[in-house]
Length: 380
Ligand code: SF4
Image (tube, rainbow, N blue to C red; front, side, top):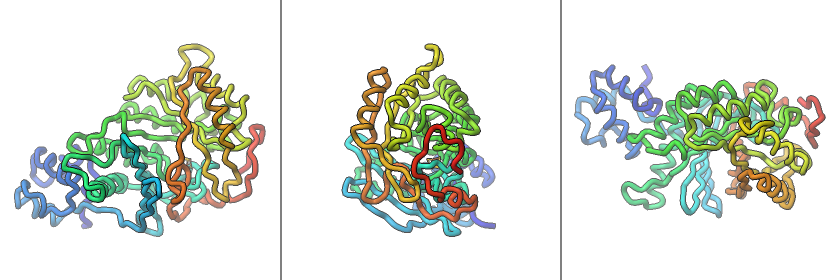
């Protein structure tokens, strides 16, 4: 029998596993702290665990790291790691340091089946879901590697924020995502606050509702268009869960969310979604026809990171700023994302990894797309 990967368990899962070994919950807590707080991978190091338990674990379990394929460090401090997840698939994880925080952008799938037009991952196609252990291993590696590399004192943390915005649609890998989030939040694990863990989704409506019940953390929604006709083209999942349903789910989510707003991501595409009329439509969309239908939100405008197969261009800076001003004047808190790690292709939407496309998304998307008009019915 292959050994159990202990990174696959949140604390309750580990306690249940320990019970099968005849051990009490407090032993699982000790073990969980060794793994996640101290970064131990060797049971022999775990000096306060009984020798009998260490021997049992050594024969039946592992703490399985991801195999590191490469590291690229940007001049701005951003670091991108490429990890081998087997069978020709590789995923990327990005560390983004800022003055007051260290953010880790984590992948949830090898590739992505949603196939957003402007996203390099989407163009790669989809291979498979990551396991909980593979999601957590990205944080486990980054936290403990960076503590050493940055010479942090005992008790200091390298990573204060996690964003599930790497490769993949996290809500299409829900069963693996939730235990990973719980491990991030657990005081015996990484102890991150719910406000500092963000799940970013392209709008999987039923799973937004499940997340609200199971593990409410901060929510970011990839909006990218102010109406269904355009969003159907840019984010194909919109055909299944159109904007009205998505915004209703956002309103429901806010009842349990750790923040009192939803972050809407809006990738600025030259001549596609960036004109003043579209800003007006966007304002009307989030304000809703009546006050009670308003979605409290922040708008995050993202300069597009062009890649050749997309056929799309970045909106000029002055157009982005004018769009932002229009939203701000309507009372919507709006930020323009700084691009980070441009020189190592670590910016938003640029993560491509290496994926064995099992869904032919890549084939469907390689048709040239020069310009997407809101009136265009179907380009796929
Ligand atoms: S933007 Fe997100 S959901 Fe869309 S294709 Fe890229 S990874 Fe998938």
